Amino acid sequence: MTHSPSSRPHIGIGVLLVNSEGLVLIGKRKGPHAPYYSIPGGYLEAGETFEDAAIREVKEETGLDMVNPVVLCVSNNLATYEEEKTHTVSICLISKEFTGVPSLMEPDKCEGWQWCDPSNLPEPHFEASQRAIECFLEGRFYRQG
Image (tube, rainbow, N blue to C red; front, side, top):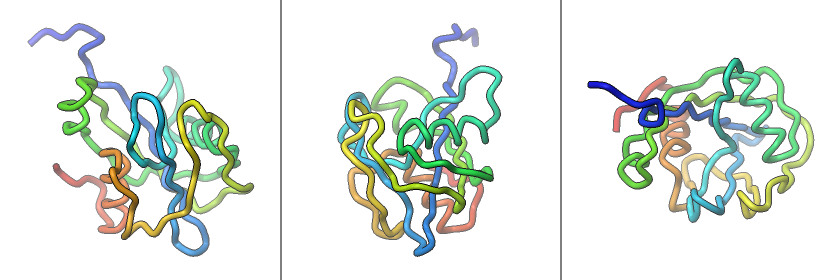
């Protein structure tokens, strides 16, 4: 099967920020990902490490300075593909090391940030974010469908 470059999956980066109380940072998305809730994230840029992308995305979206993110899990976002016709494979990283207070840095992309119990997430929840949090709670690297 031959694929054009535009038909190939994109690489998403998600970041699970966990505070000292075990809560995770969740934002309500606007624009193309509305009305979903999601962890901070975006796309990997050419030549960028997963860790550098995670640090950049967290800073751009929340204003937080994060260090030492570690790869947590991978998700193949087929439900999102069915809905949006864009296939994304997401690499999720986790960090408990960050400074600052979450701020709304991109008001055109997000309504605001809140700390949430990972076992009781707001709905509707973005597939890649949901999968990352499920993997975190279950101690898994990958969770099929």
